[in-house]
Amino acid sequence: EKYLKAALVGRGRVAQKIHDLTALLGDCAHDYPLLSPMSRDVDLLSQYAVLFRYPGQTATREMAKKAVAAMRRCRDEIRAALGFKADAIKRRRTFP
Image 1 (spheres, helix red, strand yellow):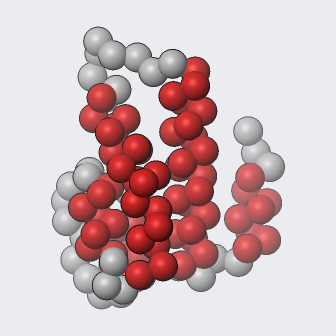
Image 2 (cartoon, helix red, strand yellow):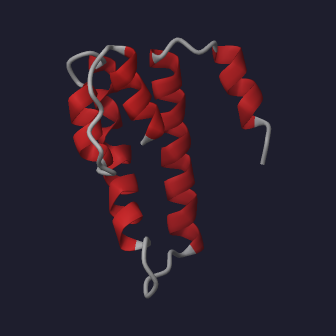
Image 3 (cartoon, rainbow, N blue to C red):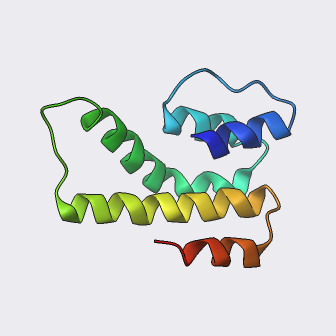
């Protein structure tokens, strides 16, 4: 969410005060068309954000692994679009 909002603000656009990743990705589409392939991962993360935000539902280990993998892919794509160096991205991945 924060990276998508940073991408918008970086282009002089107003970032909506929402948590809907799918909507935020849509807002970024004009300025960052190469991010559109992330929509599947973003949809998954948005579902999980709502489903597991409040008590009563829990994720399985497999669901958590899928969410973390999707988050990492999205983070890396957005960071690259924002101009972060690739080596900085790889270095960050070494942390647990």
